[in-house]
Image (cartoon, rainbow, N blue to C red):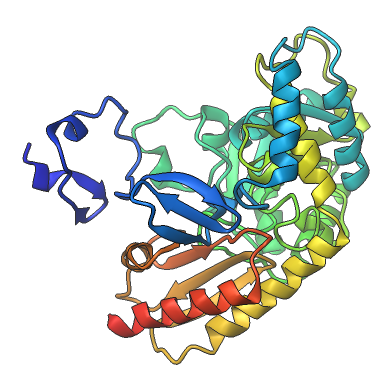
Length: 405
C-alpha cells in the first residue's frame, strides 16, 4: 500500500509522514481526521504542532464544561489519590451521592452505573424485559441510535449499521419518529407482546431531528394507556445540553427508564440507567452488573459536573443556542437547507450536493472542530462555556468556508 493511499476519512485521502505511522496497530474501525490533539484549555484544543482550535464538538457532546476545568480536575485528582477501584462488591458512598442527585433531578427512584451509553441502554432493555415478564417486545424509532453492542444495536433503527452482524437480537420493531399514529399501528402488530417504547428526545446521530411539539407527551400517554414502559435515551441530550437537565423535561413528562452517559462525567467513562421503583424492584442481585461501572474517579468527576449544572448554566445554554441559530440563519448562502436543534445541540442541514463531511474537514483546517450527522448535516455540540465572541468567530469562519465552495 502506498502512503498516499492511506484513507483517513471516507472519500478523502492524505499522505502520512513515516512508514511507522502506516503500520498502526490500531483496529481500523474509525475514519480519523489527520490531527492529533495533545492538550485543551476551556473551549480550545491544541494539536501537537501547538495549532489552536475552537472546539464546537465537545468530544461528541461529552466535555460540556470544556477542557481542563479546575473543579472537575480537582475532584478527580483528590479521588485518585485515595482510591480508584475496588469493584461493586462493596459499599459505594460516591455512587450513593450521585444516585441521589440523578433521582432527584429525574423524579425516579433507582440508578445503575456502568461505563457508557450503549451499556446504559443494554441495561434499560434488560430491565424492561425483566419487568414485563412474558412481554418482551420493544418498539423503537426508525433512524434512532442507541449503541453498537448487540442489544442496543438491535434497538437502533438504522439497517446500514446492522450489515454483516446478523443475527440481531430479536424482539424489536420500528416506527416513524415523531408520529404517534404510526406508533399505534406498529403496536398493533405486537400488542400482546410489547413491553416498552424506547426513543430519543432528539435524534442526534440521524441529523439532529427534533420531533413535533407535544410528541413526547403523546408517547407518554400512549404508554400509560397500554401499560407500557417509556424508555428515554438521554445519552446525548441529557446533562443540561438542551437547556434542561434532561431534554424530555421540556415536555414535563416522567419516563419509566432514562439512560445517560456522554456529558455525565465530562469525559471520564460513566453511564447510568435511572428507573422507577416498579422497574427497579424487579432487579435482584446477579441480574445485572459491571466490574468497572461507577468507578470512584468517574463518580467524583460526575459529582463535580452535577454541581456545575445550575439554573444559570441551563438558561445560558438556551440563550447561547438561540444566539447560534440566529447567527447561522443570518448567513447569506444558498447552501443551507435548514438549521434546527435545541439549546447547544444544533444541526445544519445542507442542500443536495453539499457534503457535510467536506465542510467539516475545511473547518478543521481553519481551526474549528465540528462533527457530522449523516452525509448532509453538520453537527454543532459546543461546550456550555462558550461565549458570544466564539459564536461570532465560528459563524464568520463557517461563512467563509461556504463561500469558498
